[in-house]
Image (tube, rainbow, N blue to C red):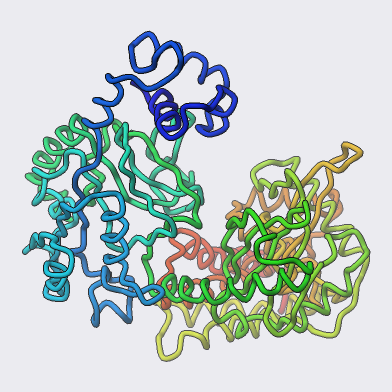
Amino acid sequence: MNRQESDIISVLIKDSCVNQRMLAKATGHSLGVVNRSIKSLTKAGYLSEQGTITTKTQKLIADKAPRKAIILAAGFGMRMAPLDTEIAKGLIEVQEETLIERQISQLHEVGIREIYIVVGFMKEQYEYLIDEYDVTLVVNPDYATKGNLHSLKLVKQHLENAYIIPCDTWSANNPYSELELYSWYMVSDAIDSKSSMRVNRKWELVMTSGDESGNCIIGICYLLQHDAKLLQERMEQLCQRTRYDGAYWEEALYDKQKMDIYARVVKASEVVEINTYEQLCEMESNFSQFDEAIAVIEETFNVKKTEIRNITILKKGITNRFFTFECKCEKYIIRIPGIGSQQLISREQEVKTYAAIAGKGICDDLIYANSETGYNIVKWIKDARVCNPQDNEDVKKCMESLRAFHNMKIVVDNEFDIFGQIRFYESLWGEKASVYRDYEKTKENIFSLKDYIEENTKEKILTHMDAVADNFLLYVDEAGDEQVQIIDWEYAAMQDPHVDIAMFAVDALYNKEQVDFLIQTYFEDKCTDAIRLKIYCYIAVGGLMWSNWCEFKRNTGTDFGEYSLRQYRYAKEYYRMVKKALEDKGYGK
């Protein structure tokens, strides 16, 4: 029985009266797949001619039913500073409930009582669970030197018909079930540039390659007998090799760059792996903040809570979270400001900026905005997509839109000091020094570009300041024409508009050839050498500014990986490029 057939059986067990169109909608498979699967299931004796479950299917369900669970809780939780020295990460509380107790309670709800918890770091803190929940603790003495591959090997005899669960996951709804018909590994629908795996069209988990992003890893897994046996054998082999001492157990699931079991994809709002202290703080604030957001929606649209439907996470930005919701037969987006964003952004100035661009066709006007809380609501644009910075046609459309905005020459009463912002992000490090050994020299070099920039800046107008690809929305209007909107104006202020070109480039991680194409596109091949060089200066300055931001975020537990390193490289490489060009021109002599 393949995955599609298993999905159909799962639906029919709950409701035998559904028709084939309803099955297609419930399973996410096409009507053709559903039709073929039903014929195959009937022929194999899993469905009767009337489409009902047979005795053969009932036996299959019993054979594959979940019986056990393994919770991995031996690790340090090093990214959970400052909590990691005070409490085991599985015992961190969210909404006055520890992560591991929530997991145990959800397992009990579906009848799973045989639970093994592999412990190591602060193992004594888990001892009370034996009396409270009748669990079995298994101690990993090597937790400090070896990865969780070795933790799971300690309970390899319990893998059959078992869930494997990282102790640092939190699930809004119960992810476990009395019914499982195939093995799976859980990821979310959110995209993560640091993820090593992605879901392909066959619902397989494959390794990412190059700069490819993957699905956010959740790590909950369910294993049936055959896959459990394979995993046991591979763990034995890998654990004998010292290069796998620090490996994650998932290494043993891979065969030729692909997992042997299916992907189970959940919504990012349903299950979360809590990796950092910052994430924990955000989750805690989400509960109270979302209650506030619901109240805002009720008041704005004059509706009751029960009339607000289909609340779904849209995306999580650097400083905010975005949710879609429906009410009064329309769909909207509400922005909930992130923790500490009030320190970084003037919401009062943001509201003034939206007032300045209102009615000019740059973006949809705000339905609701609050300069004190930072909440805002806009209408959802159907089938809108963000700009693909690797698609030249997308880039041309977005630069045309950006140029049209700049040509409006809108004026507001606040200015963005890009050099001051570098110092500001640096101040957020507190007493910590930069992780880059040559930071002070790099900073000195970047600030030396200030004179050239000022000499070649003719005017300052309203500038977006965060004109990155994700902030350009492309969509088809009612007339069938593709339109572009520029969104997220929280950093907008008076500045040289050419900064926006540089910000697009550094966020897209462009090489020099792509940077030059971007500049040519914006200026329609009429950019002077002096202006091009000034934009190179802005790339260097912007690189250091965002590098300093990344250092601040790293100190709070969020690592931006290659992005942070590339930003610092922009600062150094484009400074050298500008310096050489200016020396060749005899500038400053």
